[in-house]
Image (cartoon, rainbow, N blue to C red):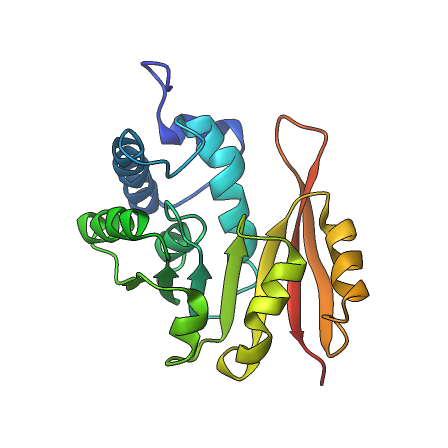
Length: 214
């Protein structure tokens, strides 16, 4: 839990991250709402600003660097709102939709979005079902499944989106090998866009882009 004198601004300063004041206010309110819901549901594994910044915010900021203005983004398996909801705060020029298949989590997420006043639709559905009816530029995916599973799930739906941006840990190389073994990358291009330290560990996080070959 947060020390009595800690707040989001202090955690941002420790990580040398600068954000506009209105974004800090919204993100701090988001954390409060998330942690309140977390006392009833399992939405997040953290409960303090330090871990929020070091994990959720850092991942979301990395994603934000590789999204173009005006992109239609579907956040797959949004859970408690990372990275999708956080992206909606950081980049109000994007059209972000959140997708969560578990009913209780989707309802909690919709409540948080409404209280924050964000224009981010929440779909209580599997992402594959959303893609059957709507089109997006980018799918953002974090902590949902191994690459093999993701590529199997979305293989029939490539006409509904242009690319995936997937956040992975150090096991990504092994997962890439598994996906190749099953022929799931034959018609796809996988590119590592960024790698960055996971604070407090010796591990690296990576941001992968997967798209159809030209």
